[in-house]
Image 1 (cartoon, helix red, strand yellow):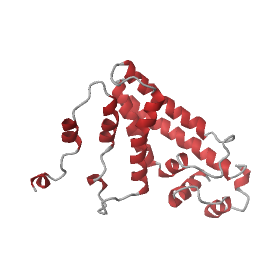
Image 2 (cartoon, helix red, strand yellow):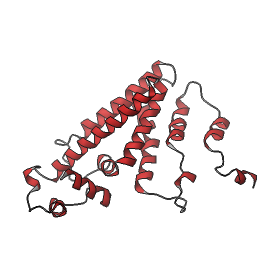
Image 3 (cartoon, helix red, strand yellow):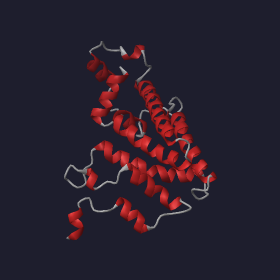
Length: 211
């Protein structure tokens, strides 16, 4: 039932279905869903919890690759976020979209979101303690860091094609570039604008630089 609900969310860009539609998709009798969930909000809350569990697993996997380096750990969380979004579009849509039917007193979304945020805050504090990024309120820094990564994830998962060519690589920077450019203003030892341009904004086609 949860898997079918997730498929519908992915197909319809959000939880735009009724429990009766879900039951029809499953080929089960009316009211079968109520044997497992009190209502649609309860079903979506269960899916949300599973989504955040998968995000936490992605975070753990990428953090392990960083091998304890504070800056690499901070970048790893950006990679984990994009990887999760691209591989779990239905979950991503559900977890980070407002729902009119959500009962905040019953929903566990805020609790799960706080757990993901705490992981990011810990990495920011570690970078500050290591003298890599400027001091400041870690929560406000987290809000700033999240904006770029989340924006890239939304564009990638919603199929935006700003160039009309089907080749987003010619328009969007990759996650490594987004990570570096987002963190750059916070670095104690910052690269120059020229270094950033050479690293991330060189022409994709060498011939185009001659025209």
